[in-house]
Length: 432
Image 1: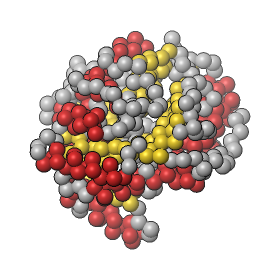
Image 2 (image 1 turned 90 degrees about the vertical axis):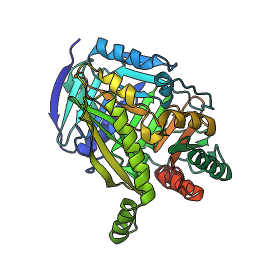
Image 3 (image 1 turned 135 degrees about the vertical axis):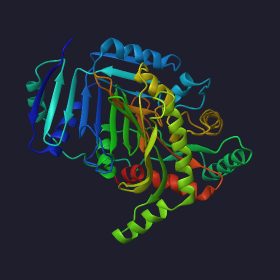
Image 4 (image 1 turned 180 degrees about the vertical axis):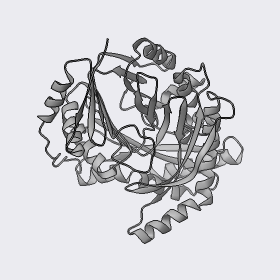
C-alpha cells in the first residue's frame, strides 16, 4: 500500500496549525505534535506533525510482550506509526508489577498506522495520504473555521490531591532514609492531582494549555474517549539515521519577573550543587542505557548542564548521544532505555520498586512516552510530563507531577518544586 504525498505552501503556518488541529480533533483516533517554534532544541524535523484515522492499530492492555509486539508491527507495516508507551511497560523490561489505583484506564501501549499524516514546516505542509487525494485533504483543512476556545468552565471544579502535603513530606523523608542506607542514590517521586465528575472539552483545554506553556514537545492524543493533553519540555529518545539522542532534564527553577532576575536565577540554577548532582546521576544512567544498544565507544555527552528557558520554569538539560550498533533493532534500543531515567532514579530497578511501594497512583501514561516512527525507522519520543489525562466516559481528570529526591533534598522545597512544575496546568484550571 503506497501513500500519496504532496507539498503545499502556506501563507500563515500558525493559522494552518489551528485549522489542522480543529480538523483533526473530530477523528476517533488522532495525534498532534507541536514544537511551538521553540528554539532551544536543535535537530527538530518539523514544526508540527499530525496523524489521523486508523488504517491499522496495535492496542495492548497487558505489558508483557509489548515491545516484541511493537517490533513485529513495525516490521510488517514499514510505515508511519504514531503511539505511546505507558510507564508500566517497565513490567515488560524488568521483573516488576503495577497494582496502584488507576483512574484513567489507558491501555499499556497503543500505536496506529494513520490514514493521513501532515508534516508542517516553516512555510509548507507535506500531506501523506492512504485515504484520498492530498489536495482534497488540504482543501478540507483550509475550509475549517477557527474560533477561540472561550470559557472552559473549569474553575468551579474541585481539585483534589491523592496524597496530603503532610504525607508527601513524610514520604520524601522515607526516601532519604533509603538513600542513607544505600538502597538508591536518587528517586523520582510523583503525586497525583485529580478532578472527579469533570465534563471537559478536552481539545479546547489542550489549546489553552498549549498557549500557556508553548512547550517544545506538546502533544494531543485522542484514543476514542480518552485524551492526553501534554505540554512536555522533555525529549526521551530520538533516532536519526544511526544516531540516538536522549536529553534528560534534572534541575528546575522559576522564571524571573524581568531579564535581570531571569539571568540571576539561571546562574543560580547552573551553579546549584544539588541540581548538578541530580543531573549527573541521570546522565550516567542514560549513558549506561544507550551503551546497551550503541557501538562501543560512541556514547558521549554532547552537552552538560544546559540551561533551557520555558514559559514558567528554567531547567538543566544534558544531551547524550550514541551510534546504534549494527544489527540492533531500533525498537530494542527504545526497550533498553525505557523507562527514562529522569522519571525513575538510580539504580533504576530498585527505584522503580520503591516508586510502586511509595506512590499512591499507578502512573500509566504519565511518565511514559508518546511519539512517532517513520517508514525509514527513525523516531522521536517525548517524556509525558506537565500533562492532563482525561477519561471522558468516567469524567475523571488526572495530572501527576514529581521530582528527583536525593539525600540533600529538603521535603518542603521538593513540594514547592512540584507546584512550580504544575504551574501551567494550574493556570489553565484556574483561569479557564
